[in-house]
Amino acid sequence: MSERIPAKGLEAQGIETRADLHWNLTTARLVEAAVARGEGRLSADGPLVVETGPHTGRSVNDRFIVRDEETRDVVWWGKSNQAMEPDHFAALKADFLACLKTKGDLWVQDLYGGSQPEHRVNVRVVNELAWHNLFIRTMLVRPTEVELKGFEADYTIIDLPSFRADPTRHGTRSETVIAVNLTEKLILIGGTKYAGEMKKSVFSLLNYLLPPTGVMPMHCSANIGPNGDTAVFFGLSGTGKTTLSADASRTLIGDDEHGWSDTAVFNFEGGCYAKMIRLSADAEPEIFATTKRFGTVLENVVMDQVTRQLDLDDASLAENSRGAYPIDFIPNTSEQNLGPVPKNMIFLTADAYGVLPPIAKLTPDQAMYHFLSGYTARVAGTEIGVTEPQATFSTCFGAPFMPRHPSVYGNLLKERISAGGVDCWLVNTGWTGGKHGVGHRMPIKVTRALLNAALDGSLKEAEFRTDPNFEFKVPVSVPGVDPQILDPRATWADKADYDATAAALVDRFVENFAQFAEHVDEGVRQAAPRVAQPA
Image (cartoon, rainbow, N blue to C red; front, side, top):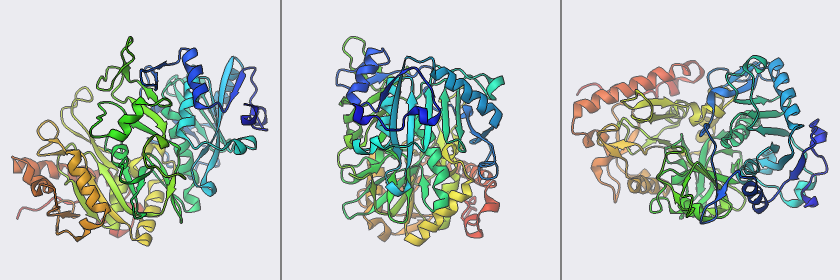
């Protein structure tokens, strides 16, 4: 394996350790190590099954960016981008490096963030857990053996779940920390076994680096139709981004984060990270098949101790159970992890209020408005005291990963949409016939039929009406789809309740967008929804 060890090792980065260094191990060897060390177990069909403990998702309140000369006037400081002072980071770094010196084994992967060579970054990841090393190797873009020898890291991630931060010494909120230092090109992750923190940190890095080069970073999935037509799908967790892009009739570019350059849409990753809870073999056959493949890593999926059979419906370990697998586990994927610039852009929302239509066509101004809004809704019953749907706005459909001001991304997106003549669609994968608890979830077959019509161009020829509240265009009829479901108000038994619910949602949109009003032009401001006046 010496050919997989780079000429410049950790010492070139000022990292000292007496640990046995396991460089750029392949999947099988990392699985063997993880099982031998008791980090995970093999299921009956081959995937590695692991548990992440109390952290079953991102620790959003424990993530920091170091505020220094590089970042002070560039980063959008606030809830998503919390500041850490340089002195606190210096103490944290010293303690991380001291911790590394105590480890008996460390796993190191040299990887690319980004599939288009001229826009990628070299990332070195140092792990104390073999399965974390397997996870990040699965998720990022893997260099060739020839490329590994001369690999030099642009950025380094040190990931130590056993590390415990000291809020007083390190300026953290708790014992968990994700600290990003863009000047030192170093990311430190401690106190959490949730592996997704690593990949999200790479997203944040690229989302910071790419806009000044004119490349639009996007928290989206992307695929290519048989005629070379690329579609990108924006959406927050649970809206169907991964599911809807894994379509056997189209070529998958990726499921989570991409860049839009002058020449291509390119995947930031070499793998997929899909929700596993209640995964359906009928509705999501391509993703379901990965649960029976060696090389897949399953997080917090319940498994029978005797038979090693999986129970994907059991949420006792986590509602956010996940599967990480190489992108080529999905049939019909892009060999180069990239495709042509987009023809269609889809904004996915799971509207638990049941107000939004299953599909609507957006103007460029409306597209920017909904991109900056990043709307979806939490359903009742997910948190104590939540009895009604709750509107959730995540700017750019990925605020936690966007270090710069949202207007930077929004204006860049609008420019590219207008220059490329991209068709933009808003798709509701949430509720119809009433809000959550009264109505029912939008049938996935309806969503797929509408998407197919949008992507093949036929939907543009349909008759459209103007939505009275949001003023976007909604098709009146689509072959193979019940016309009633296209008009959300028509699906509600209580029309007055629909009107009141729609008005409340409009108010939430307007209230949320106030923070962006001064950063956008008049056309975007005019794209705001308005409460429909009685006829």
